[in-house]
Length: 374
Ligand code: ADP
Ligand code: MG
Image 1 (tube, rainbow, N blue to C red):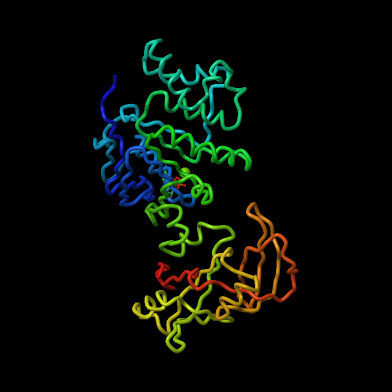
Image 2: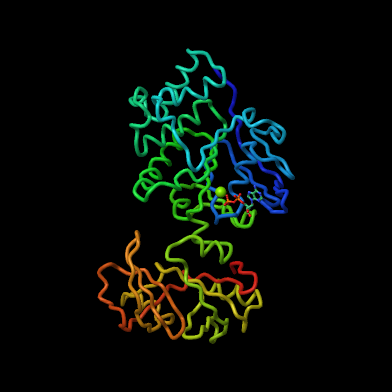
């Protein structure tokens, strides 16, 4: 019986990667991931996600800093000595082999005996609930089961850390959806420490308990999906998550009696007491800021308009578009453009004037120069 306490957290301390051509892959990157945690690294192309994953896996030399797995510094260990498994973008199963053989392959290479292989393959298959597939040729396995086999192959050798670099990027929408749903459950059961990389903001939000948002080789924000969406630390993070993207309007901070308001080119709104205080304390009175309003926070119903009277504005409906989350409409107020999520049954037609409003507590505020949230 293996009684050893698993201690396979991952710690990155001031890790940097400078490529020989002068390119900066990752800079001064520090992150702690607990044993069994599932973390999603998310950010645009070129933000350093793959570089980081390759350094953890030992496929890329570390220019600076330390990587610790289960408390042990692994900078100088070979990939196979690190007890890390990786799943890449274009993962493939060995098509001629059965599922069993696919799972056994790495174990054979590692020199495990027949009985040990059989035991580990069966354990892994049970964990992933694919016991019934073991005798099938892998080319006949599809959908989420196929992904489970890929994960199973990576896990059969009992890595302490599972690294996944955008494994779903080549799949079509429906398949991605199925996989996302399956993946969360799989990882919950496995309890293996996992780092999942994706460029796709909505995928990250659906998968992750904890998201680490990357940009230009550094961490922009580290938090739960809820925190990242509702309390973005800066304009970039606010704009990266959410579709259509958050509306951002330049405006000036002014006082109106004892209230603090924003005055944009074409419309105005009242800040909450708390936000108003933060703006005054920060010396923003009379200064330009950026006001952010998410499309789903814009209300068109009479009740909300009544309730948020002071923030209401008349706008001209422009284009109406559909996406996977429903319908949204573009409104114009002079030169200002606002995208708003609307009900599919809306009677508003392009060209119509409509009244819109927003709850003051749903207004995001960013510094115009630093782009940081206020
Ligand atoms: P991501 O996976 O987030 O798209 P990468 O880790 O691939 O980002 O790249 C991060 C940065 O490092 C980019 O600016 C990229 O151009 C640079 N980079 C990546 N690989 C190399 C390499 N082999 N040589 C030089 N620069 C590289
Ligand atoms: Mg990449």
